[in-house]
Every structure is written in structure tokens, then in C-alpha cells.
Length: 83
Image 1: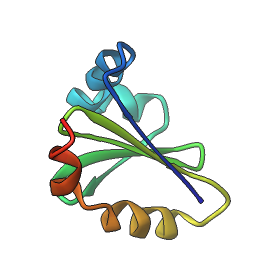
Image 2: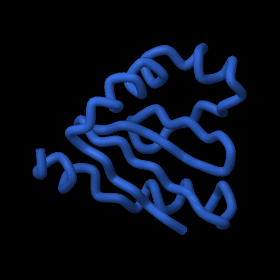
Image 3: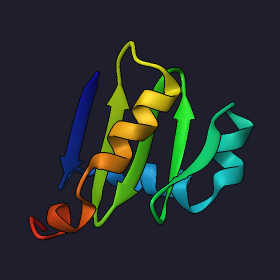
């Protein structure tokens, strides 16, 4: 399992459009779900969501349920303190 947290990256603006309009993501085959209060996208064995200006990507050989569990285990309030 791999968890990547990206912040202060110009590419985040493009990803924000996907999260702002889930119909776009669904049209490309992504499953829309919630991680806490945040909207997440699951596609191609990767779980991605944005919170407080950070993009979080959970990937690897684990199951979808495992990725959701790891994503929910991230302390988003502590992450917000880094901004």
C-alpha cells in the first residue's frame, strides 16, 4: 500500500475540477465515494481525494476496502495544520 500526499502543486487545480463536478469523473469510469466529509474518486485501483489543499492518493495491491480504511485513518485535521 502506498499513500502519497501532494500539496502546493499547479496540477492540483486540474484535479479540483474533477472533485467539483463528479459527473465528469463518473463519465470516465470513476466511482464517487466519501472519505469523511470529502468526496473521493476510486478508479484503476487508486483512491484519490482532496482536503485542505492537499491531494491524497492511496494505491497499491490492496483491496478497495483496505484503501478506504487507510484513507479514513489519515488525521485530516493534523494535515490541515501543515498548510
